[in-house]
Image (spheres, rainbow, N blue to C red):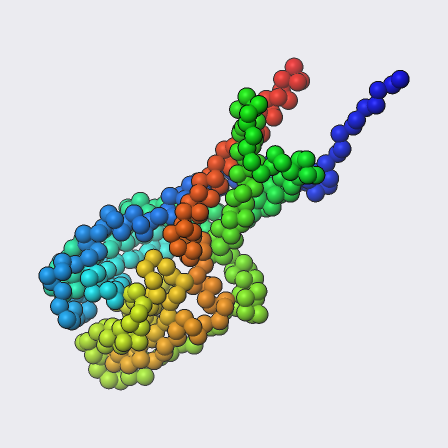
Length: 401
């Protein structure tokens, strides 16, 4: 009798092309995915680490605390005179916690530069005791590890305007790799499913098999969180991604445009205490919030002159998801606009929350831990994937000889 030969079933069309795309994209952008994943993972606990390292300057001496802090204008002049910087102060972050110091920021960009170090002319953070004007600490953020990690993660230290696309394109390909990876992982039957969820290395001696399992099993478990991280990442880079989110959440592809509010009191003399008037009103309107930021140089992020004084109020420390927006007359300090977090539509709320979703802080410290572990696994995937490809290549080479 002739023995029956059991032919191996050919892979389906979906699995065949998933394998090809997974390999091609992995080899082409694997290194960038490794760098972006590693830098992002190292950035996750930025706030927790800095809060410990800067504890002495973030809080004021209890003996110096008074009923009312010094004028913002007075503190601004004091910092300007003591530091003698080439550029004007950009903004001040005022905490509603009376035990905390004010954070004055110098930030200026060079539009003609092509890399991070040339693009950022100055990024200096000054911690000031608001009750006596004492400068508690000065940090050159331009050369601090976390802003550098952020720039690597965002644009590979290239100019942010176009560097984000150098990272954005590989991230889009990484999303395709995650989807094709799930298709390749998907078991054919119940028997095959057993070995896809856990490691069984009792009878496994070769490192190749262990490496394959690490890539296959860890890749599956991290894929869904990695998709959330990746999609929230390209949300920053591509307007079309933002438009899809906006349409899904609120039925319109664009966020409501802010109507320009001109200061009606432009004919009157500018009040010397305009910043203090804005600070006082903000404290009254949002006493339960964490802090608020006031621009001091009269310009927006693009360097254009502001028609008024926009004040951003943050609901919680280390999070941007809950924030409200105020606008004050830049001459008289009169309140012109008050848009609370509750008044925003779902797309606007998500726009504020996207950074927190991307870093895991939206889900608290537990979310950050999960995001950190997921980041480590994402960092390992290009390495384990490359080793799988290398092992197969060597095997084919041996067969040929």
